[in-house]
Image 1 (cartoon, rainbow, N blue to C red):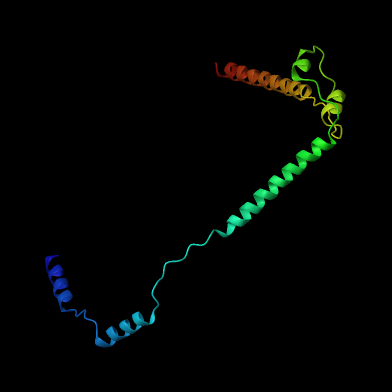
Image 2 (spheres, one colour):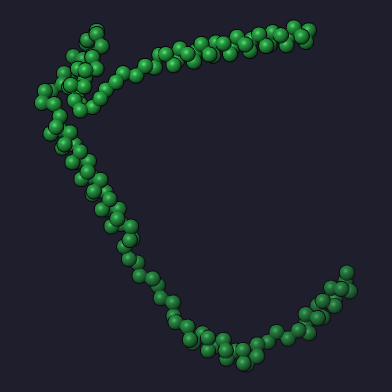
Length: 141
């Protein structure tokens, strides 16, 4: 390996790595032909105006909706929460609809029956799993 390394070093020393005068003149001409790099002038972000316009239009739309709801809303003032909370009978849906939003259609949701069906399915699955485990244990032992 030492002989190979010695030959590589000799070959490297024999290589002439100089730049010819012709190449030097071409490089100098290219450098003179280029323009000097100037710093870019900072301009305001183009999206900033769009951001302001969308923010203001969103705010205007929210104000218009609030004004329309208050203008078209019921003329009677709903009962304070303390009076509603003291009732033992639940407030009727029709009463709430008339007080707060007469143009909305309010329906009660039935969450009990799907949960009862899911509980029955879960109990059946647990019973089947218990029977399968019991059969496996009986078969094994």
